[in-house]
Length: 353
Ligand code: GLY
Image 1: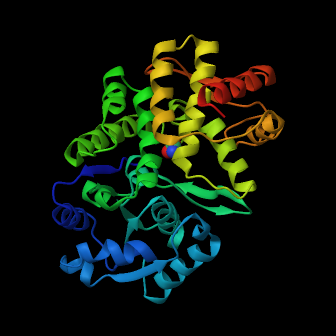
Image 2 (image 1 turned 60 degrees about the vertical axis):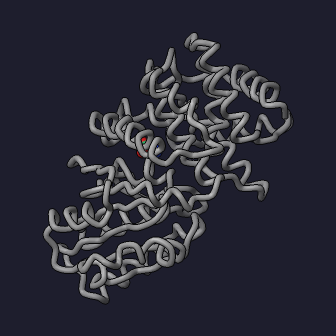
């Protein structure tokens, strides 16, 4: 898998023109969802190549990350004469970059694409690292492929219009990157004033956060080993996300990850001796900024069951990424049911639910 270039833009138009020029193509297509078509695409229209590009617009949000939306993208590519040498630009959040990346990976066995993420979650996670796909059969990201973008252009000016919930959703993945990298990076994330955002500071944090992911993906693009570090918080987080969805009180992905981090830091503490003061500091940050996901002890079995279905498991054994310390990663950890239930007790007690 070739390495993708990730650019923290000073001037998006300039970086985009360079990225397009660096990727010879016959026709140019730009995929947006209904929101980014209205709110973000006008910012790129001054670029001559963009004003002439064929536009493809799909419905917004995860409910549209479907085979039908994917087919509608293939349909336009096909009808408008895309060839193997065409180029697709994906302008949007993680739904657009995942689905657009998969459309590009599969159309005529693969065309080049460039990601321009517009949400924090997409900037620090979804758009980087080559995971593409769609939801299928009620399962998230069930169908997909590893196919890196040629370039990922990070324009943090888009973040100024992000609502609080989407800001914090992305920030949870940044906290995860802090935990799996260095104490310095974790501390600057915990110290960041989330009530009065300094966007130039945030830009620096985004750059450092994404480079944590890039470095890991470069070592292990297809997740055979160290890339599993990026799953910290996700084994429990996905179970919370699924329970919330089943109970028709859906939560944003990053919120589920933040609450998953609370649980998995506790497991790290009891199983790997993760320092208690660092665990407490991260939990405090999460409690203050994310609130808590409420559940009771009657739902432990259901959460446990959901965790056994996580696609990262093998042979029915629940797989966790845990930590001995900040940046000191323990892959392929497991825990028995008793420890998992004790972890839920801890979560409810410290989060006050
Ligand atoms: N979102 C985790 C990964 O890209 O591996």
